[in-house]
Image 1 (spheres, rainbow, N blue to C red):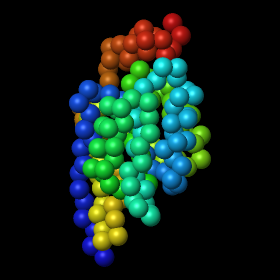
Image 2 (tube, rainbow, N blue to C red):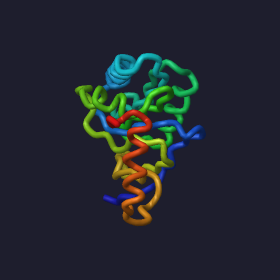
Image 3 (cartoon, rainbow, N blue to C red):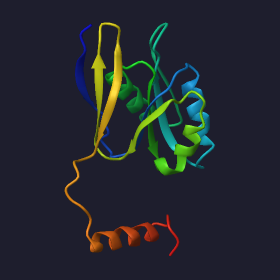
Length: 163
C-alpha cells in the first residue's frame, strides 16, 4: 500500500493558542467543550473534531463563532480521522491541558502552542493520519547563563513561579 505525505499549515491569523490532538469517539466535541468551560472563567474557544467513520463529518462546538469557524476550517484541511483542534482566546494551554488530558476520549496531544504549526499528514487509500507536528522554529543554540536568568525572571514576572 502506498503512503504519501502532506504538510498542512494550521491557519492562525491572530497568533492564538491552539491545541492539536487525537481522540477516539464522537462525543469528543461535547466533552472537550465541557472541560474547557470548567477550566477557565471567561474562556473563548472553538473545537473541531474529525469523525473517522459513518458520515465522517467535522463536528464543531465552542462558545465563539469566529473561533469555531477557524477550528472547523483547520480540521477539514487536516482531514485525518479522529483529529481534533482547539483554538483558545482569553486562556492559555497551561490553563486547560490537565482538564483535556482527563477527557476519556483523548488519546494524544500533539501540540499546544501559539507558534506557527504544521501538521504532517500521511495519506493512504483508506484515509489520512497524523504523523506528527512541526511546532515553531528550529533550535538555534544553547542558552547562556544570561538567557537562563532572563527565563527565570520572565516566569516570575508573569506569575508562574514564586518570586
